Image (cartoon, rainbow, N blue to C red):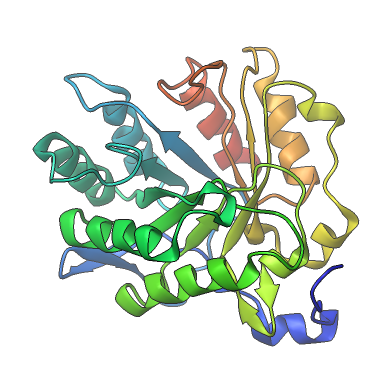
Length: 274
């Protein structure tokens, strides 16, 4: 059932670009990474689904981006996407976060490939027109082999036509197929979130094929992790070949509406260890 998988011998030439390191310059409102910089082996990508009121978690995020250049990314989500019009409060925090060295992704949902491609593209174009950003986060990503690889590949191609080299993260949140990274010899997305769960994270193991790709291609997103468990969760994500991670003690119905108290301690540990 799986689409044709490229041989390991071809991966060196066809694998996706490294995700951006610390921003260096700004052109037309969009930051580009410094050519040649090698990103660290483990980075933090925060679903930052909180409104930028005074003293919101965006303040801590920007401080973290400044303290750990090239380590911190955030997914912005004004209104289940970019929203119908520019929100100046988001413009301010997005600009500050990026100026501090953070990498900003715009949230777009895809309804597991059922949402019309034109509607998703319209959201992507709205993000690029309304806010400065570095990449796109495609949520509700399908993981059915042979079903929607071309759909997501078209979205990534569209993003990169507007933002050359931009990272595109896809979120099935569960095990998926390598055809959702590479399909018919071309990238589908830059990175796949292969685990998003509130229980059982330390007993989860990535599929065997994951080891054949660079760790920058994988992202783990455990939540409901207590203060005495975040270090083990970080280490486990790295052991399972994930190059992006975010761990939080927040819980459903929205585990992404705040930052954990241990956020800064976690960043210091990742910086020192990885």
